[in-house]
Amino acid sequence: MSEELKCYAVSEKSSRGRIYAEKPHRYRSDFERDRDRIIHSTAFRRLEGKTQVFTPGLDDYYRTRLTHSLEVAQIGRTIAKVLQLNETLTEAICLAHDLGHPPFGHAGEKVLNDLMERFGGFEHNQQTLRTVELLEHPYADFAGLNLMYETRLGLAKHRSTYDNSKGKGFDEKNCSLEGQIADIADRIAYNCHDLEDGLRAGIISDKELQNFELFAEAQNQVNAKAIKDAAVVRTRTAKTMIDILVSDCIETSEEAIKSAEIKAVEDVYNRTENLIVLSQENNLKLEQLEKFLLENFYSHKSLLQTTDKIRKWLGTLFEKLCKKQDLMPDYYQQLAAQQGLERTVCDYIAGMTDRYCLKMLGNKRWI
View 1 (cartoon, rainbow, N blue to C red):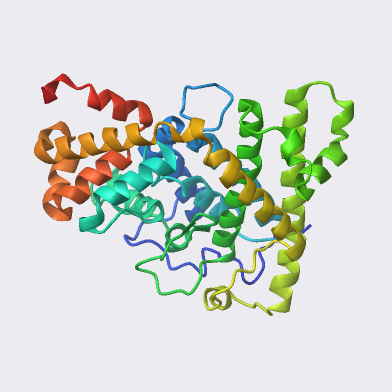
View 2: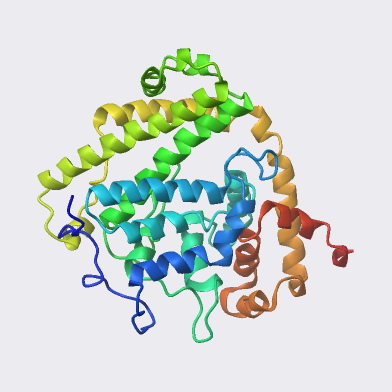
């Protein structure tokens, strides 16, 4: 297969570049530099301590936001490579797509949104953009990571079953095909891997899943009945489900792009509908699985029992930081004058790991 990019792939030549001009690097492309800046960012490292579904540290086997992001990137790169799109741009968007998630997962996001109701609300995709454009500050001359336009566009317009960012500040109807790959890679990853984690935790059982075509098809392919080790069955089933969906996505998207007669990146931007898609048949199978996970896994009482505690924790932290700004780092104290106190406190809390948030609550300086 030729490694030459398709005419509708994002390239450095077609890119709108960075907000602040920078000299080209001697041996790294602009999108490779974006990927590297994301990986080396503080926000990326903190994903290790942020809840995916299970609280980090509960068990070494469960996913965190960090491992999830790495898995999304691997799926995204595969799809981009086969479709001859910009693999490095895809990887950068995938790695960064969850940087705006606060501590304690979706429960934490709901609490922060409620706390910020009078101040513009909170939405993790927009927070991701704030993180890379403002909150990360490794450079002396400007705030943010100064990422390429197309990387930021992919983050601003990230979509999933559970969220649909408005992409404020960007006029395009849609993001690039590389950004669309990040969306579908995220969807494939969290459904298949959350399913595996749910089975491992015993919250759901394989007996409950036998009537779901995607699960049954994967188990049949791995000959699950012949494998005695339950851990092997879980892992092989999840990986096979991913393979089924990724293969289907590549084939279906290739046909969709061809049928739409896409000739340039601008053609992609001007279409509201995605062209990186699953077939109708496999999309339905995945939707059925998503509904099951929502009703039987994400809403399970064992995962929801800390919701009231999270509301109390974040509410207390928000109130204390608004009253005692000196508990925040100097950068955030300076930022408060520009961005508003409540928004800055929200920024600071959103960047915390679960552990650090609880550590702050035990800070004796509050007494």
